[in-house]
Length: 279
Length: 297
Image (cartoon, rainbow over all chains, first blue to last red; front, side, top):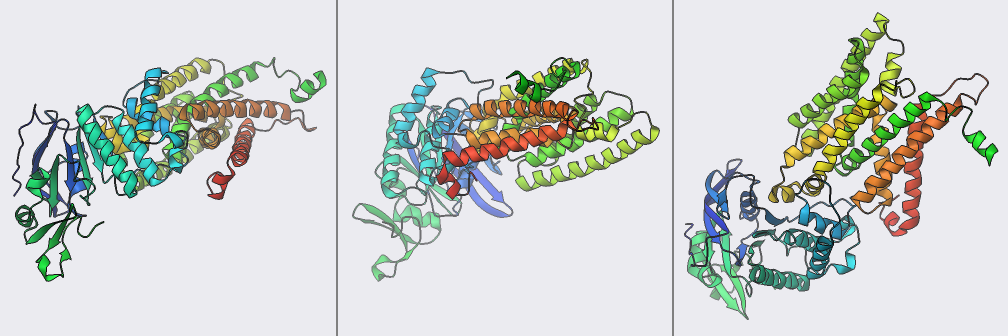
Protein backbone atom coordinates (compact mmCIF):
# COMPACT_ATOMS: atom_id res chain seq x y z
CA UNK A 1 0.00 0.00 0.00
CA UNK A 2 3.04 2.20 -0.23
CA UNK A 3 2.86 2.83 -3.93
CA UNK A 4 4.75 5.86 -4.99
CA UNK A 5 3.90 8.24 -7.75
CA UNK A 6 7.23 9.48 -8.96
CA UNK A 7 7.17 12.70 -10.86
CA UNK A 8 10.14 12.82 -13.19
CA UNK A 9 12.34 15.68 -12.12
CA UNK A 10 15.84 16.76 -12.88
CA UNK A 11 18.60 14.80 -11.20
CA UNK A 12 18.48 12.02 -8.66
CA UNK A 13 16.44 12.36 -5.48
CA UNK A 14 17.95 14.19 -2.51
CA UNK A 15 16.01 11.92 -0.18
CA UNK A 16 15.05 8.37 -1.14
CA UNK A 17 13.02 6.42 1.41
CA UNK A 18 12.60 2.82 0.30
CA UNK A 19 10.21 0.42 2.00
CA UNK A 20 11.04 1.62 5.52
CA UNK A 21 9.42 -0.34 8.35
CA UNK A 22 9.81 0.36 12.06
CA UNK A 23 8.49 -1.67 14.96
CA UNK A 24 8.84 -0.17 18.43
CA UNK A 25 8.15 -2.37 21.47
CA UNK A 26 5.97 -4.71 19.48
CA UNK A 27 3.94 -1.97 17.82
CA UNK A 28 4.26 -1.42 14.11
CA UNK A 29 4.91 2.31 13.65
CA UNK A 30 5.87 2.39 9.99
CA UNK A 31 4.94 -0.22 7.35
CA UNK A 32 6.96 -0.20 4.12
CA UNK A 33 6.98 3.56 3.64
CA UNK A 34 8.47 4.74 0.34
CA UNK A 35 8.84 8.17 -1.22
CA UNK A 36 11.38 10.44 -2.81
CA UNK A 37 12.14 14.14 -2.62
CA UNK A 38 14.14 16.02 -5.22
CA UNK A 39 16.10 19.25 -4.93
CA UNK A 40 13.91 22.32 -4.61
CA UNK A 41 10.80 20.35 -3.68
CA UNK A 42 8.75 21.44 -0.67
CA UNK A 43 7.13 18.29 0.68
CA UNK A 44 4.61 18.08 3.48
CA UNK A 45 4.66 15.04 5.76
CA UNK A 46 1.03 15.06 6.76
CA UNK A 47 -0.86 12.79 9.10
CA UNK A 48 -2.80 12.65 12.34
CA UNK A 49 -1.00 12.54 15.69
CA UNK A 50 0.56 9.14 16.25
CA UNK A 51 0.74 8.33 12.53
CA UNK A 52 4.54 7.93 12.75
CA UNK A 53 5.71 11.30 11.43
CA UNK A 54 8.35 11.88 14.07
CA UNK A 55 9.58 8.29 13.83
CA UNK A 56 9.95 8.67 10.07
CA UNK A 57 11.96 11.87 10.53
CA UNK A 58 14.17 10.12 13.08
CA UNK A 59 14.82 7.32 10.60
CA UNK A 60 15.82 9.84 7.93
CA UNK A 61 18.13 11.55 10.43
CA UNK A 62 19.77 8.26 11.32
CA UNK A 63 18.60 8.48 14.94
CA UNK A 64 16.34 5.46 14.55
CA UNK A 65 17.42 2.30 12.75
CA UNK A 66 14.65 0.95 10.53
CA UNK A 67 13.65 -2.69 10.90
CA UNK A 68 13.39 -2.95 7.14
CA UNK A 69 14.07 -0.89 4.05
CA UNK A 70 16.63 1.86 3.65
CA UNK A 71 17.05 5.60 3.45
CA UNK A 72 19.53 7.37 1.25
CA UNK A 73 20.35 11.05 1.42
CA UNK A 74 22.02 12.40 -1.72
CA UNK A 75 22.71 8.82 -2.77
CA UNK A 76 24.35 7.78 0.50
CA UNK A 77 22.91 5.27 2.92
CA UNK A 78 23.89 4.37 6.45
CA UNK A 79 24.61 6.21 9.64
CA UNK A 80 26.21 8.50 10.65
CA UNK A 81 25.12 10.65 7.77
CA UNK A 82 27.88 11.84 5.53
CA UNK A 83 25.67 14.59 4.17
CA UNK A 84 24.68 17.14 6.78
CA UNK A 85 20.94 17.53 7.16
CA UNK A 86 19.31 20.68 8.45
CA UNK A 87 16.98 19.72 11.27
CA UNK A 88 14.52 21.63 13.42
CA UNK A 89 13.19 19.38 16.18
CA UNK A 90 9.70 19.87 17.53
CA UNK A 91 10.95 20.65 21.01
CA UNK A 92 14.42 21.70 22.07
CA UNK A 93 14.88 22.35 25.75
CA UNK A 94 16.94 25.51 25.84
CA UNK A 95 17.94 26.17 29.42
CA UNK A 96 17.63 29.81 30.54
CA UNK A 97 21.09 29.43 32.08
CA UNK A 98 22.65 28.59 28.73
CA UNK A 99 24.89 31.60 28.02
CA UNK A 100 23.87 31.81 24.38
CA UNK A 101 22.15 34.58 22.47
CA UNK A 102 19.94 33.98 19.46
CA UNK A 103 22.73 35.07 17.14
CA UNK A 104 25.20 32.69 18.82
CA UNK A 105 22.88 29.74 18.34
CA UNK A 106 22.51 30.60 14.65
CA UNK A 107 26.29 30.95 14.29
CA UNK A 108 26.63 27.50 15.84
CA UNK A 109 24.43 26.23 13.01
CA UNK A 110 26.98 27.60 10.55
CA UNK A 111 30.07 25.95 11.99
CA UNK A 112 28.98 23.86 14.99
CA UNK A 113 30.25 20.64 13.45
CA UNK A 114 33.75 22.03 12.89
CA UNK A 115 36.65 21.26 15.18
CA UNK A 116 39.04 23.69 16.79
CA UNK A 117 38.56 27.20 18.07
CA UNK A 118 36.38 29.64 16.14
CA UNK A 119 38.10 32.53 14.46
CA UNK A 120 36.31 35.84 13.99
CA UNK A 121 34.67 35.98 10.59
CA UNK A 122 32.93 38.95 9.05
CA UNK A 123 31.38 36.62 6.48
CA UNK A 124 29.79 34.47 9.19
CA UNK A 125 28.53 37.50 11.10
CA UNK A 126 26.97 38.77 7.88
CA UNK A 127 25.34 35.39 7.22
CA UNK A 128 23.97 35.33 10.77
CA UNK A 129 22.55 38.84 10.33
CA UNK A 130 20.92 37.76 7.08
CA UNK A 131 19.37 34.72 8.74
CA UNK A 132 18.15 36.76 11.74
CA UNK A 133 16.43 39.04 9.29
CA UNK A 134 15.07 36.18 7.18
CA UNK A 135 13.28 34.63 10.15
CA UNK A 136 12.32 38.04 11.54
CA UNK A 137 14.39 37.64 14.67
CA UNK A 138 16.29 40.94 14.59
CA UNK A 139 14.49 42.23 17.67
CA UNK A 140 15.63 39.43 19.96
CA UNK A 141 19.01 38.73 18.36
CA UNK A 142 20.83 39.50 21.59
CA UNK A 143 18.43 37.86 24.04
CA UNK A 144 19.33 34.60 25.74
CA UNK A 145 17.71 31.78 23.75
CA UNK A 146 16.43 30.16 26.92
CA UNK A 147 14.36 33.25 27.70
CA UNK A 148 12.62 33.39 24.29
CA UNK A 149 9.07 32.20 23.68
CA UNK A 150 8.43 28.89 21.93
CA UNK A 151 7.69 30.57 18.61
CA UNK A 152 10.77 32.77 18.84
CA UNK A 153 12.94 29.76 19.63
CA UNK A 154 11.42 27.97 16.64
CA UNK A 155 12.45 30.77 14.30
CA UNK A 156 15.98 30.88 15.73
CA UNK A 157 16.27 27.10 15.34
CA UNK A 158 15.07 27.38 11.74
CA UNK A 159 17.74 29.99 11.03
CA UNK A 160 20.26 27.72 12.73
CA UNK A 161 19.31 24.90 10.35
CA UNK A 162 19.26 27.05 7.22
CA UNK A 163 22.57 28.81 7.68
CA UNK A 164 24.52 25.63 6.94
CA UNK A 165 22.92 25.55 3.46
CA UNK A 166 21.86 21.90 3.77
CA UNK A 167 20.68 19.92 0.73
CA UNK A 168 17.87 18.49 2.86
CA UNK A 169 15.93 20.32 5.56
CA UNK A 170 13.68 18.46 7.99
CA UNK A 171 11.19 20.26 10.21
CA UNK A 172 9.17 18.46 12.87
CA UNK A 173 5.80 20.21 13.41
CA UNK A 174 7.25 23.72 13.07
CA UNK A 175 3.81 25.29 12.96
CA UNK A 176 2.62 23.75 16.22
CA UNK A 177 4.09 26.56 18.33
CA UNK A 178 3.32 29.45 16.04
CA UNK A 179 0.35 31.76 15.68
CA UNK A 180 -1.38 31.77 12.32
CA UNK A 181 0.40 34.80 10.89
CA UNK A 182 3.94 33.73 11.90
CA UNK A 183 3.05 30.28 10.61
CA UNK A 184 2.12 31.67 7.21
CA UNK A 185 5.29 33.74 7.15
CA UNK A 186 7.48 30.75 7.95
CA UNK A 187 5.71 28.64 5.33
CA UNK A 188 6.13 31.16 2.52
CA UNK A 189 9.73 31.74 3.64
CA UNK A 190 10.38 27.98 3.43
CA UNK A 191 8.75 27.76 0.00
CA UNK A 192 10.95 30.54 -1.29
CA UNK A 193 14.08 28.97 0.22
CA UNK A 194 13.28 25.59 -1.33
CA UNK A 195 12.88 27.17 -4.76
CA UNK A 196 15.75 29.66 -4.67
CA UNK A 197 18.36 27.52 -2.96
CA UNK A 198 17.19 24.20 -4.42
CA UNK A 199 16.88 22.67 -0.94
CA UNK A 200 14.65 19.65 -0.49
CA UNK A 201 12.35 20.36 2.44
CA UNK A 202 10.35 17.79 4.38
CA UNK A 203 8.01 19.40 6.89
CA UNK A 204 5.75 17.43 9.19
CA UNK A 205 2.36 18.77 10.23
CA UNK A 206 -0.95 17.41 11.41
CA UNK A 207 -2.75 20.31 9.78
CA UNK A 208 -2.29 20.56 6.01
CA UNK A 209 -4.38 23.57 5.04
CA UNK A 210 -1.85 26.32 5.78
CA UNK A 211 0.62 24.35 3.63
CA UNK A 212 -1.51 23.41 0.61
CA UNK A 213 -0.86 26.57 -1.44
CA UNK A 214 2.90 26.08 -1.32
CA UNK A 215 3.49 22.33 -1.11
CA UNK A 216 4.97 20.70 -4.21
CA UNK A 217 4.33 17.23 -2.93
CA UNK A 218 2.74 15.50 -0.02
CA UNK A 219 3.52 12.34 1.91
CA UNK A 220 0.35 11.37 3.75
CA UNK A 221 0.86 9.02 6.71
CA UNK A 222 -1.97 7.12 8.34
CA UNK A 223 -1.67 3.99 10.45
CA UNK A 224 2.01 3.68 9.59
CA UNK A 225 1.42 3.54 5.84
CA UNK A 226 2.12 6.29 3.35
CA UNK A 227 0.72 7.69 0.12
CA UNK A 228 2.80 10.20 -1.76
CA UNK A 229 2.51 12.38 -4.81
CA UNK A 230 1.26 15.83 -5.62
CA UNK A 231 -1.47 17.08 -3.32
CA UNK A 232 -4.16 16.67 -6.00
CA UNK A 233 -3.06 13.06 -6.53
CA UNK A 234 -2.93 12.10 -2.86
CA UNK A 235 -5.76 14.06 -1.27
CA UNK A 236 -8.58 12.18 -2.92
CA UNK A 237 -11.40 10.15 -1.43
CA UNK A 238 -10.15 6.94 -3.12
CA UNK A 239 -6.48 7.27 -2.16
CA UNK A 240 -7.07 8.26 1.47
CA UNK A 241 -9.84 5.70 2.00
CA UNK A 242 -7.44 3.01 0.82
CA UNK A 243 -4.77 4.38 3.15
CA UNK A 244 -6.99 4.61 6.23
CA UNK A 245 -8.52 1.22 5.44
CA UNK A 246 -12.04 2.58 5.75
CA UNK A 247 -14.12 5.10 3.88
CA UNK A 248 -13.14 8.74 4.28
CA UNK A 249 -14.46 11.65 2.30
CA UNK A 250 -12.28 14.48 1.00
CA UNK A 251 -14.22 17.72 0.87
CA UNK A 252 -13.07 21.02 -0.60
CA UNK A 253 -14.74 23.95 1.13
CA UNK A 254 -13.76 27.57 0.42
CA UNK A 255 -10.34 26.45 -0.77
CA UNK A 256 -9.79 24.36 2.35
CA UNK A 257 -9.53 20.61 2.37
CA UNK A 258 -11.43 18.60 4.93
CA UNK A 259 -10.97 14.89 5.47
CA UNK A 260 -14.01 13.43 7.18
CA UNK A 261 -15.10 9.90 8.01
CA UNK A 262 -18.27 8.36 6.68
CA UNK A 263 -20.95 10.03 4.63
CA UNK A 264 -20.80 13.82 4.78
CA UNK A 265 -24.37 14.25 3.55
CA UNK A 266 -25.64 12.76 6.80
CA UNK A 267 -24.48 15.89 8.56
CA UNK A 268 -22.90 13.93 11.41
CA UNK A 269 -19.53 13.68 9.77
CA UNK A 270 -16.89 12.72 12.30
CA UNK A 271 -13.36 13.98 12.04
CA UNK A 272 -11.20 11.21 10.66
CA UNK A 273 -8.02 12.87 9.76
CA UNK A 274 -5.97 15.95 9.99
CA UNK A 275 -7.43 19.24 8.86
CA UNK A 276 -10.90 18.07 9.70
CA UNK A 277 -12.90 21.05 10.76
CA UNK A 278 -9.78 23.11 11.24
CA UNK A 279 -9.82 26.83 10.66
CA UNK B 1 49.95 52.96 50.68
CA UNK B 2 52.99 51.01 51.77
CA UNK B 3 51.43 50.28 55.11
CA UNK B 4 48.30 48.97 53.46
CA UNK B 5 50.31 46.65 51.21
CA UNK B 6 52.28 45.46 54.23
CA UNK B 7 49.04 44.72 56.03
CA UNK B 8 47.64 42.75 53.10
CA UNK B 9 50.81 40.87 52.20
CA UNK B 10 52.52 39.52 55.29
CA UNK B 11 56.35 39.43 55.35
CA UNK B 12 58.07 37.23 52.80
CA UNK B 13 55.00 36.47 50.72
CA UNK B 14 56.49 37.47 47.37
CA UNK B 15 59.89 35.99 48.16
CA UNK B 16 58.63 32.59 49.27
CA UNK B 17 59.42 29.84 46.75
CA UNK B 18 56.51 27.83 48.10
CA UNK B 19 54.18 30.69 47.29
CA UNK B 20 55.61 30.85 43.75
CA UNK B 21 55.00 27.15 43.19
CA UNK B 22 51.53 27.29 44.74
CA UNK B 23 50.54 30.35 42.71
CA UNK B 24 51.78 28.76 39.48
CA UNK B 25 50.12 25.38 39.98
CA UNK B 26 47.01 26.98 41.47
CA UNK B 27 46.67 29.41 38.56
CA UNK B 28 47.05 26.70 35.92
CA UNK B 29 44.62 24.38 37.74
CA UNK B 30 42.08 27.20 38.14
CA UNK B 31 42.16 27.92 34.40
CA UNK B 32 41.75 24.27 33.37
CA UNK B 33 38.94 23.81 35.91
CA UNK B 34 37.15 26.95 34.73
CA UNK B 35 37.31 26.03 31.04
CA UNK B 36 36.06 22.46 31.49
CA UNK B 37 33.69 23.58 34.24
CA UNK B 38 31.73 25.91 31.95
CA UNK B 39 30.81 22.89 29.83
CA UNK B 40 30.16 20.78 32.95
CA UNK B 41 27.65 23.35 34.20
CA UNK B 42 25.99 23.75 30.79
CA UNK B 43 25.70 19.98 30.39
CA UNK B 44 24.32 19.59 33.92
CA UNK B 45 27.09 17.16 34.87
CA UNK B 46 28.20 18.67 38.18
CA UNK B 47 27.44 15.36 39.86
CA UNK B 48 29.66 13.57 37.35
CA UNK B 49 32.42 16.06 38.05
CA UNK B 50 32.13 15.40 41.76
CA UNK B 51 32.18 11.64 41.23
CA UNK B 52 35.40 12.02 39.24
CA UNK B 53 36.83 13.88 42.23
CA UNK B 54 36.17 10.81 44.37
CA UNK B 55 37.69 8.54 41.73
CA UNK B 56 40.68 10.86 41.79
CA UNK B 57 40.90 10.42 45.55
CA UNK B 58 40.99 6.65 45.14
CA UNK B 59 43.72 7.00 42.50
CA UNK B 60 45.77 9.45 44.54
CA UNK B 61 45.64 7.32 47.69
CA UNK B 62 46.51 4.19 45.71
CA UNK B 63 49.49 6.01 44.21
CA UNK B 64 50.70 7.01 47.69
CA UNK B 65 50.30 3.45 48.90
CA UNK B 66 52.56 2.04 46.18
CA UNK B 67 54.98 4.96 46.39
CA UNK B 68 54.07 6.89 43.26
CA UNK B 69 53.47 10.60 43.03
CA UNK B 70 49.80 11.28 43.82
CA UNK B 71 49.20 13.24 40.59
CA UNK B 72 49.74 10.05 38.57
CA UNK B 73 46.99 8.35 40.55
CA UNK B 74 44.70 11.37 40.55
CA UNK B 75 44.73 11.68 36.77
CA UNK B 76 45.27 8.02 35.87
CA UNK B 77 42.34 6.56 37.75
CA UNK B 78 40.24 9.62 36.92
CA UNK B 79 40.60 8.80 33.22
CA UNK B 80 39.61 5.17 33.85
CA UNK B 81 36.62 6.39 35.89
CA UNK B 82 35.52 8.81 33.17
CA UNK B 83 35.68 6.08 30.54
CA UNK B 84 33.74 3.73 32.81
CA UNK B 85 31.05 6.33 33.47
CA UNK B 86 30.73 6.95 29.75
CA UNK B 87 30.45 3.22 29.03
CA UNK B 88 27.92 2.39 31.75
CA UNK B 89 25.47 5.19 31.34
CA UNK B 90 25.26 7.48 28.35
CA UNK B 91 22.40 9.14 26.52
CA UNK B 92 19.65 8.82 29.05
CA UNK B 93 19.80 11.25 31.92
CA UNK B 94 18.60 8.81 34.56
CA UNK B 95 21.05 6.05 33.71
CA UNK B 96 23.83 8.62 33.61
CA UNK B 97 22.90 9.66 37.11
CA UNK B 98 22.88 6.07 38.33
CA UNK B 99 26.20 5.23 36.67
CA UNK B 100 27.72 8.29 38.32
CA UNK B 101 26.39 7.27 41.73
CA UNK B 102 27.72 3.73 41.45
CA UNK B 103 31.18 4.90 40.37
CA UNK B 104 31.23 7.53 43.15
CA UNK B 105 30.33 4.99 45.84
CA UNK B 106 32.98 2.50 44.75
CA UNK B 107 35.60 5.23 44.60
CA UNK B 108 34.97 6.44 48.15
CA UNK B 109 35.12 2.85 49.40
CA UNK B 110 38.47 2.30 47.74
CA UNK B 111 39.76 5.63 49.06
CA UNK B 112 38.88 4.59 52.60
CA UNK B 113 40.79 1.33 52.16
CA UNK B 114 43.88 2.84 50.55
CA UNK B 115 44.13 5.71 53.02
CA UNK B 116 43.79 3.28 55.93
CA UNK B 117 46.53 1.04 54.56
CA UNK B 118 48.80 4.02 53.85
CA UNK B 119 48.47 5.50 57.32
CA UNK B 120 48.82 2.18 59.18
CA UNK B 121 52.03 1.38 57.32
CA UNK B 122 53.32 4.70 58.53
CA UNK B 123 55.22 5.58 55.37
CA UNK B 124 53.47 8.88 54.87
CA UNK B 125 52.02 11.18 57.46
CA UNK B 126 49.01 13.28 56.72
CA UNK B 127 47.94 11.19 53.73
CA UNK B 128 44.19 11.76 54.20
CA UNK B 129 44.69 15.52 54.47
CA UNK B 130 46.95 15.54 51.40
CA UNK B 131 44.65 13.46 49.19
CA UNK B 132 41.27 14.74 50.26
CA UNK B 133 42.06 18.38 50.95
CA UNK B 134 45.05 19.20 48.78
CA UNK B 135 48.74 19.81 49.05
CA UNK B 136 49.43 22.96 47.10
CA UNK B 137 51.93 24.32 49.66
CA UNK B 138 53.87 21.08 49.93
CA UNK B 139 54.12 20.35 46.23
CA UNK B 140 57.63 20.56 44.83
CA UNK B 141 58.61 22.52 41.73
CA UNK B 142 59.36 19.26 39.91
CA UNK B 143 55.59 18.75 39.64
CA UNK B 144 55.09 21.93 37.61
CA UNK B 145 56.07 20.45 34.20
CA UNK B 146 53.69 17.50 34.71
CA UNK B 147 50.88 19.87 35.66
CA UNK B 148 51.61 22.10 32.66
CA UNK B 149 51.61 19.22 30.19
CA UNK B 150 48.39 17.70 31.55
CA UNK B 151 46.76 21.13 31.57
CA UNK B 152 47.77 21.71 27.95
CA UNK B 153 46.33 18.32 26.95
CA UNK B 154 42.99 19.01 28.66
CA UNK B 155 42.72 22.56 27.29
CA UNK B 156 43.72 21.37 23.81
CA UNK B 157 41.07 18.65 23.86
CA UNK B 158 38.36 21.10 24.92
CA UNK B 159 39.48 23.64 22.31
CA UNK B 160 39.37 20.93 19.65
CA UNK B 161 35.80 19.80 20.36
CA UNK B 162 34.28 23.00 21.79
CA UNK B 163 31.89 23.75 18.94
CA UNK B 164 30.56 20.21 18.35
CA UNK B 165 30.36 19.81 22.13
CA UNK B 166 28.29 22.96 22.41
CA UNK B 167 25.99 21.84 19.61
CA UNK B 168 25.58 18.41 21.22
CA UNK B 169 24.91 20.06 24.59
CA UNK B 170 22.17 22.19 23.05
CA UNK B 171 20.57 19.32 21.15
CA UNK B 172 22.11 15.88 20.57
CA UNK B 173 19.60 15.31 17.75
CA UNK B 174 20.57 18.44 15.84
CA UNK B 175 24.24 17.61 16.36
CA UNK B 176 23.75 14.08 15.02
CA UNK B 177 21.88 15.44 12.02
CA UNK B 178 24.84 17.69 11.30
CA UNK B 179 27.17 14.68 11.33
CA UNK B 180 28.72 15.30 14.78
CA UNK B 181 29.88 12.05 16.45
CA UNK B 182 28.01 12.99 19.63
CA UNK B 183 29.20 10.03 21.67
CA UNK B 184 32.87 10.49 20.79
CA UNK B 185 32.77 14.23 21.45
CA UNK B 186 31.15 13.54 24.84
CA UNK B 187 33.90 11.03 25.67
CA UNK B 188 36.67 13.51 24.77
CA UNK B 189 35.03 16.02 27.08
CA UNK B 190 34.77 13.45 29.90
CA UNK B 191 38.46 12.60 29.59
CA UNK B 192 39.40 16.30 29.67
CA UNK B 193 37.18 16.61 32.74
CA UNK B 194 39.01 13.70 34.41
CA UNK B 195 42.38 15.39 33.82
CA UNK B 196 41.04 18.70 35.07
CA UNK B 197 39.62 17.16 38.24
CA UNK B 198 42.85 15.22 38.79
CA UNK B 199 44.88 18.43 38.67
CA UNK B 200 42.38 20.14 40.91
CA UNK B 201 42.74 17.29 43.43
CA UNK B 202 46.45 18.02 43.58
CA UNK B 203 45.84 21.68 44.32
CA UNK B 204 42.85 21.85 46.64
CA UNK B 205 42.09 18.18 47.23
CA UNK B 206 39.93 15.55 45.61
CA UNK B 207 36.91 16.29 47.76
CA UNK B 208 37.07 20.05 47.16
CA UNK B 209 37.87 19.86 43.44
CA UNK B 210 34.17 20.27 42.65
CA UNK B 211 34.22 23.75 44.19
CA UNK B 212 36.84 24.98 41.74
CA UNK B 213 35.20 23.12 38.83
CA UNK B 214 31.66 24.36 39.36
CA UNK B 215 31.93 27.58 41.40
CA UNK B 216 33.71 29.99 39.02
CA UNK B 217 31.78 28.80 35.90
CA UNK B 218 28.45 28.98 37.75
CA UNK B 219 29.32 32.53 38.84
CA UNK B 220 30.41 33.45 35.29
CA UNK B 221 27.19 32.09 33.77
CA UNK B 222 25.26 34.46 36.01
CA UNK B 223 26.88 37.55 34.56
CA UNK B 224 27.69 36.67 30.94
CA UNK B 225 25.57 36.04 27.86
CA UNK B 226 28.09 34.39 25.60
CA UNK B 227 30.05 31.17 25.99
CA UNK B 228 33.42 32.70 25.16
CA UNK B 229 32.85 35.38 27.82
CA UNK B 230 31.64 32.79 30.32
CA UNK B 231 34.90 30.90 29.85
CA UNK B 232 37.00 34.05 30.13
CA UNK B 233 35.21 35.35 33.22
CA UNK B 234 35.25 31.88 34.83
CA UNK B 235 39.03 31.76 34.35
CA UNK B 236 39.43 35.19 35.95
CA UNK B 237 37.18 34.25 38.88
CA UNK B 238 38.96 30.93 39.37
CA UNK B 239 42.47 32.35 39.28
CA UNK B 240 41.49 35.26 41.53
CA UNK B 241 39.86 32.97 44.09
CA UNK B 242 42.87 30.64 44.08
CA UNK B 243 45.41 33.41 44.52
CA UNK B 244 43.37 35.17 47.20
CA UNK B 245 43.07 31.83 48.97
CA UNK B 246 46.84 31.32 48.84
CA UNK B 247 47.43 34.83 50.17
CA UNK B 248 44.97 34.50 53.04
CA UNK B 249 46.33 31.11 54.02
CA UNK B 250 49.85 32.53 54.04
CA UNK B 251 48.72 35.56 56.05
CA UNK B 252 46.78 33.45 58.55
CA UNK B 253 50.10 32.30 59.99
CA UNK B 254 50.52 35.81 61.41
CA UNK B 255 46.96 36.29 62.62
CA UNK B 256 47.01 34.59 66.00
CA UNK B 257 49.64 34.22 68.65
CA UNK B 258 49.84 30.48 68.00
CA UNK B 259 51.36 30.96 64.54
CA UNK B 260 49.32 28.25 62.93
CA UNK B 261 48.53 28.72 59.23
CA UNK B 262 44.99 27.74 58.28
CA UNK B 263 44.45 25.40 55.29
CA UNK B 264 44.71 27.01 51.86
CA UNK B 265 41.88 24.89 50.47
CA UNK B 266 39.47 26.43 52.93
CA UNK B 267 40.36 29.94 51.80
CA UNK B 268 40.19 29.08 48.10
CA UNK B 269 36.76 27.53 48.48
CA UNK B 270 35.61 30.46 50.62
CA UNK B 271 36.76 32.88 47.91
CA UNK B 272 34.97 30.82 45.24
CA UNK B 273 31.73 30.93 47.19
CA UNK B 274 32.11 34.68 47.78
CA UNK B 275 32.59 35.16 44.02
CA UNK B 276 29.47 33.14 43.31
CA UNK B 277 27.37 35.20 45.73
CA UNK B 278 28.76 38.47 44.36
CA UNK B 279 27.96 37.40 40.80
CA UNK B 280 24.42 36.68 41.94
CA UNK B 281 24.14 40.22 43.30
CA UNK B 282 25.47 41.68 40.05
CA UNK B 283 23.02 39.62 37.99
CA UNK B 284 20.19 40.76 40.26
CA UNK B 285 21.17 44.40 39.82
CA UNK B 286 21.32 44.05 36.08
CA UNK B 287 18.12 42.15 35.40
CA UNK B 288 15.42 42.67 38.00
CA UNK B 289 12.92 41.12 35.58
CA UNK B 290 14.82 37.86 35.57
CA UNK B 291 14.72 37.78 39.36
CA UNK B 292 10.95 37.96 39.21
CA UNK B 293 11.04 34.72 37.28
CA UNK B 294 13.29 33.22 39.89
CA UNK B 295 16.13 32.81 37.43
CA UNK B 296 18.88 35.08 38.58
CA UNK B 297 18.18 35.02 42.28
